[in-house]
Image (cartoon, rainbow over all chains, first blue to last red; front, side, top):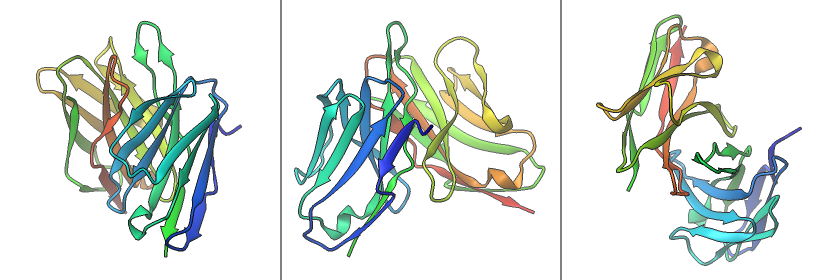
Length: 116
Length: 113
């Protein structure tokens, strides 16, 4: 069983469109994340949700909006897509351990977004 | 603030040779350190992690890393490289109470037959 899954794996779209990427984790974790990996492979966190509450919101255009319907799902909606949004987007999840703090983050397979 | 520096964006080694990928961190509090591997067109897979305790950490696929506080380093090693080790490797740091996992810029490992 896949621990962290994302759909779609590939997404090709035109500039100006609105698109969503879905993420689900079956690990029972309380926190989920979205990362962006650019063409140079640099990984940067975008958002983090803990039990459906936004806890990290990095400097990301407000065209990007995360939505967490429940703690097993974190979707990423992108409005008015731009060429510079082309990247690989990774979802991840983790769990707080009482005395150890944040545990390992487990990543999904990624969604490669291409904006034409 | 926390940060990670990976020395060498590209490393090439011969099959059977020692693999050494360097990672230095900066953190004002004790760090948790991770190495992730990314195979072409795939997601990130955890290789190993250091939180507390033994400073020499063993991971999957024969990799290990040693946490050296005095050198602020967490270098990744493997005694004998295999063709299947060719991938991108990322070092990452997080600290207790900080929700952000900060990644290094990655090192692409190439194995020469």
